[in-house]
Length: 233
Image (cartoon, rainbow, N blue to C red; front, side):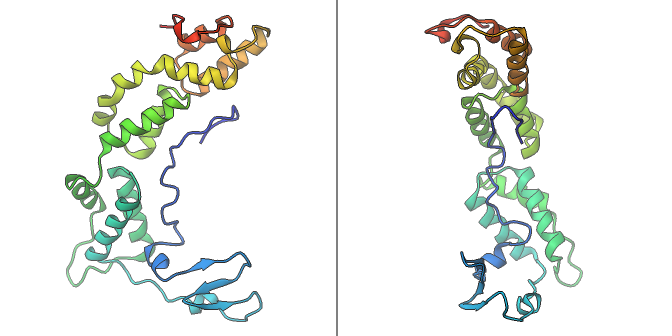
């Protein structure tokens, strides 16, 4: 979630995943709302005054077993670039919602193990996810601290985060200038403005995740036709 400086990030790229109230079973049963506000299922519809109890009309979803959970995991990784952590959280949520029926004497599924199996098969790649997420966020002007926060939210472990840290550092100035360009700060500004405005601009850059020393240099820079050539390191 971003602040009031008008910049958003894409840390919820999986926001189109099945919501908690509508999972794969709902999708396959064809439930949807049309523009008239009428609920439809399998060609049947009920108007607002239909008098039917929708809770009774909707069949309860069966508890999950190992095969169903694996199919759910496969559908998820087919639709979304994700991480082991996010996939684990998704599967755990579905078990809580639907319950577990693994058969007599069967142990409860371990979503973390299934997520790791998806990674071993190459369906989930945390490092590639981290590289792509970092590059996308920095192109939009977000700094290293914001990227690190997105990594934590996505469940990227320390090893994968450290592996992409040098690339993030290499793009630090480029990313900060991208933010300054969007907000008309420093070399992209008019040169007008008092100390209060500069403090506000500095605060905006810090909220965007940029280093204090780098943000201060950019805010203090005079207008320039080629700010990319200026020395901000």
